Structures are given as structure tokens and as C-alpha cells.
Amino acid sequence: TFRLSCPSLRDQLEWKSACDAAFAVDTRDSTKAHRFFESSFVPYLILNKDGTREGLITGYYEPLLRGSRTPDRVYRYPIYGVPDDLLVVDLVALHPDLKGVRLRGRADGNKVVTYYSRAEIERGDAQVRGREILWVDDFVELFFLQIQGSGRVQLPGGSVVRIGFADHNGHPFRSIGRILIERGEISPDKASMQGIKNWAKLHPDRLVALFQENPAYVFFREMPASDLGPIGAQGVALTPGRSVAVDPAAIPLGAPVFLSTTWPLSTRPLNRLVIAQDSGSAIKGAVRADFFWG
Image (cartoon, rainbow, N blue to C red; front, top):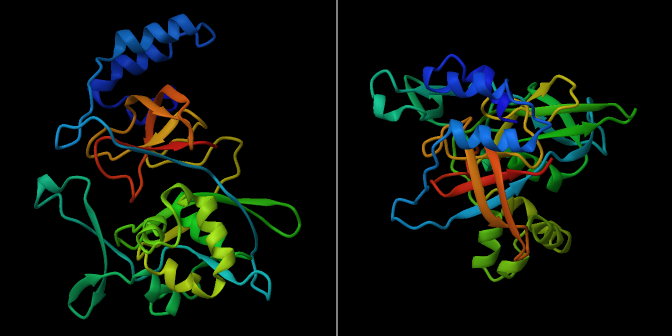
């Protein structure tokens, strides 16, 4: 998994020796692989800004949806590509301290203003007509596809199209699970994706309003067919169980990270070396990671 990161790292002097050494390791020998990481890297303890050590580890995956290249009564929920009026503002040339910060907006006369929210996009305010990539049959699955950031869509004939993250509308992510907890709709132990889907089945008339309280919206692009995982923010295929999404402001992409956490909904320890190869709008802070399951 670390080797997959090296093509995007080798031109950086501080990574060259580690990447060169990685390709000399016989990965069938776990002792040599173990020794490689111990000899090539110096461990640092990651702390939050307040000095605490604990944080949140979540998980994500590549979902499979049912869809079509043409809309009909069944396939009526569009997956959009990047709209033509979405602007990306990079201020690093004027403000080097904003490295990695890229704002999204749109032109309004001679001003750049905030891009449309989820509610406004779904209402038809944005220039998304004609930017449809596919249509799917399930509004709830489409919402969670946006949270996952990539997925596969099975077409009526059986073929599968892979789609990946292309851009977003720049609005901050707001957790639907947290909203339901705060309103007393579900208990904290039921705030998983499965728990939210169960709530959705019981309250179909309230779904649109609830989902629109998360103003963040993701746009996709069609990806080449591949047996490897989806492409992460580093531009490399993700490895199930070994790739994580991090906040690049705290952890550089490509870096090995040792997780000391638990398996989902369990006290069973999960202690594992993983590689930071992805990022996400909801993954903010130092002790924060999203574990890719596959």
C-alpha cells in the first residue's frame, strides 16, 4: 500500500530514500516489511490542539447502487458531474498560510459568492441540467454515496460503472446522525448509517428536509474500470483495510499512520499500520481518520 503512494512522493527529496527502500523489500517476508517501516520512519505521537490524545475514527466504503444512463420512472435521481458555474478560488499565491485551502464559489455579476447549497442544487438553482452522469433508483443511497465519495453503479444490462469524487460545493459537512440525536429521534448507539437508513424507512416524508440540513454536496466523474480500489485524494487506488482518509493539514498524504482503536460497535482492539491516502470534507483535525473498508 505504501508503494502505491511512491509515484506521487518520489520527486520530493524527503520521501525519496524511503520509497527507494520500499521497492527493495520482499513483501512476502513480514519481518523485512516490519523492519522497513521501523528503519525508514521516526514515530511521532499525534495530539489534538488541546493536547489530548483521543479522537474519532470512522469508516467508509465503496457502495454499489442500481442505476441507468437514461432517466425513467425507476431511475430518477441524478448523479451530477461538476457544473459549469462552479469556481475554485486558490489564494495561496497571495496568502501562503492558506496552502491547501481552496474555496468554492460562483460568479454573481462582478463578485464571487458562495456556491449553491444542497437545498438550492436540488431545487434547481444551480446550472446542473445537462451535467447528469447517471440516474439511480434510491434517494437515500444517493445521499450516502455523496458521504462515501466514490462508488459503483450497476446498469440494467449488468455492467458496472465506477464513479469517483470530482469536486464539491464548498459548504461544510453537517452530520445527519448528530442532528437526529440532538432532536431525540435516535439514540447515539443507533446513529450509524444503518440506523439512519432504518429511520428513513419510517419517515420517508421527512427525508428531503432532513438531508438538506447537510448543505455539503459532492459532484462525481466517471472512472476507468479497474480491479483496484477507488482513487483517493492522493491520486492512488485505495487498499481495503490499509488506506485511511486524514486531514492533510495535520498528517501528510502518503505517511504511515498507526491506528490504536476498536472494531466498529465493539471493544475488540484494532491496532494496525495504515497509509494516509485520502481526505474528506468531514475529516478535520489531528486525531481523526476515516478507515477504508473496501
